[in-house]
Length: 256
Image (cartoon, rainbow, N blue to C red; front, side, top):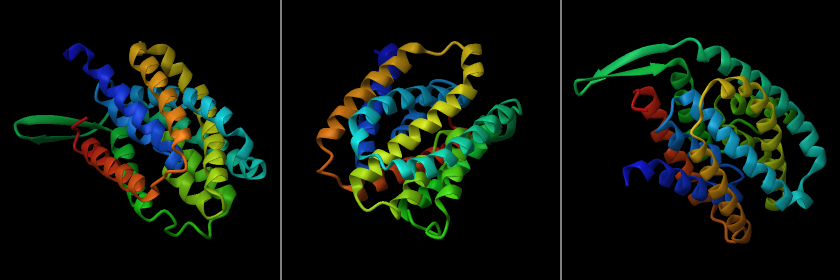
């Protein structure tokens, strides 16, 4: 049973997280990265999450294509694409820095990499954004907002909270908000995967986990689309924020 536990965890998390994305416009990368990070190094987990995220976004774009705001996509998504490239390039640079610090507790020493430090801090910051999604973001232009959210998407895969915060005040209909957010996310995935690709080819990825995550995410997308009108944004926001806090603290303590 233990040998199947990683796959079962990935299937469950990917399915639930993918379903939630239709309720909030984000969540798959946020919840799936911690699951992958339990079994592989963080930099590999980021790339694996990007693969699942990308495949699922292709499917979701077809599901919501009719309600995408194309003008908003061009302005916000174009900036997010540039930001994603910068973030992904920074991730490649930081990847070679190695261990940032060590922590010892309960007679065990835990290593924290520079990537773990940065991603951990980002997750804690994003947890605040989850609870207060419009905090100090109203006055920021769409172009700058796209650049910022895309940058963090390329760096850690966690663009969803910021993207939702920037877009929520600019879109009146939830259907348009969800569809446009998905399209922007696909652009970011395309950019960061093209930069991650060299690292992906250097490492033997556990393809069973990646494929399982993709298939479970597909199923979650279909079900999420059907349940779309029965949304509870507040509940989803709280769940994602709690997950971010737990993951951020765990990374900063070197537990994963």
